[in-house]
Image (cartoon, rainbow, N blue to C red; front, side):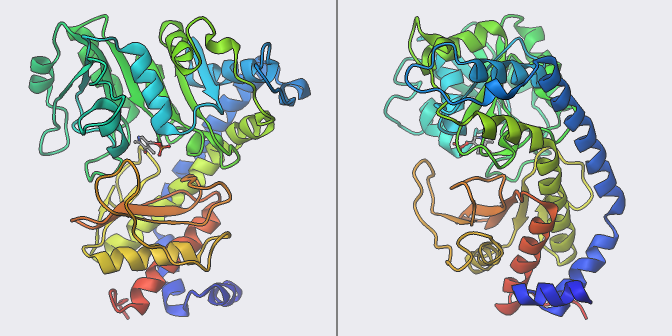
Length: 428
Ligand SMILES: *Cc1c(COP(=O)(O)O)cnc(C)c1O
């Protein structure tokens, strides 16, 4: 009763609250499984920090060139420890996930090489990076070609197509773990491992890069545990734990990561330069919190799927499927419903709760996008957020929540707004 009353002060009606509680009753076992993965990953991160003797000197700020930056260098060893790779590049100078992926691709592809995506079209922003859509300074402009094998209608890998596309010039294979703005399934680490092994069986020296955005710490293993040469992601998603205010990471073989460092800074300089600007406490502590923050976000995603599927909306993943990333797609079927959903997420935020999300033509995306986010770190999507391109099937992509409790408020508020707009009627 007390909870229902405090939720009412946030704008959640008793009916919506009770509907949510009923859905939650069915999720105890799922949540226990998520907690077990978090427990494993917490130990994994802790072990990497202990092995690398993290201490207070690693939190010191550096400026200028950043030569001999102990905190930065050790953080990279910790990341390599967590992802079980030879090397890592973890920098505030990597501005976002797209930048990290761009560095990894352009460092490891030379004119005449071909890039292959065996999992269909990549994330929207990579289209201009690769040159699928014309873009200045794209890989295509530098003479790197691109090939793609689409997924089978059931979302599985089309091994025959991959075999036919992989050729003498194929230098690098890019595998996107998370669905991004598509309604295909996200891939498990196991599936990515199988695909990696298949590509390497056809061409042993081909490099495999995994776009690991939103997948970190969702399972106990990462794609680098199963043969990927590089795993790449953003620090304002899972591995920053909500505390990193900027940054990206590339973990992988020494050979690949070294090239990334030369691409990011300059040939000859590589990993030696790049001051940490006082961000080390946030990077270390964020990584430390990342397994449990990711678990909270996952619980939110599972809760949302259960709530919305029961109301007749198609959800990817569905209410009972295993999870491979923190994203929940809910197909709402109309522009109005997308806007109502996003208004609810926005209204539930700790920051900017009073603003109304409006669709806009966001750079890097080819249709209007609506975004709800009231985050401590601008654009952070490990914080509770929802977004989606305004185009059929009008799916909203929901993710994040620094705590499960906040994710729950957000989801209930999204439903509240749909109910208030007359777009959803709760069963009596
Ligand atoms: C978020 C994301 C990116 C790009 O990251 P930004 O930080 O937004 O540039 C790339 N791939 C996937 C799958 C993502 O989810």
